[in-house]
Image (cartoon, rainbow, N blue to C red; front, side, top):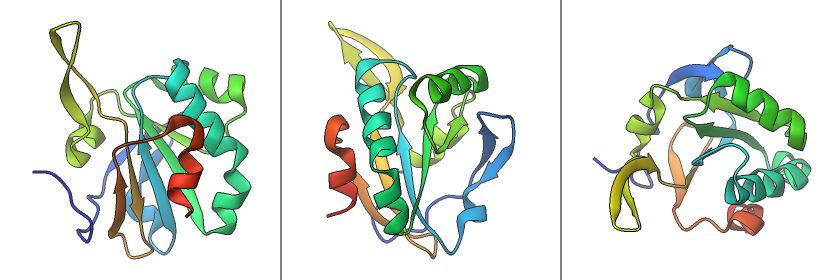
Length: 149
């Protein structure tokens, strides 16, 4: 079942880059940019993360907390954060449980071969835990502009 604007965002519990438990419900009362991306240290994902990093202050001023989610390991996330000085939390969703709840673990195809992977998608969640916007055509180099209009 695909999620829609106006629905309550599914709560999740997963580990961040440091092995700490993170729950979406911990962010109630705050606006959240929950972005799903395919892989640490790949060109598009790096461009997206760096755009969010470079505009992090503006995102925070607008009241947003930023959380990235990929199926990479905690160790991979730690390296990605250090290499690019990312100021926000990254979820290590190795079992794809968060992806499953948000419908972002999908069949994709490259060169005619089907495989499972992450649909690059951002969910803007309001202070009440409701999905305010879903961005599924992410412009990696100008993602902040898609969030703050």
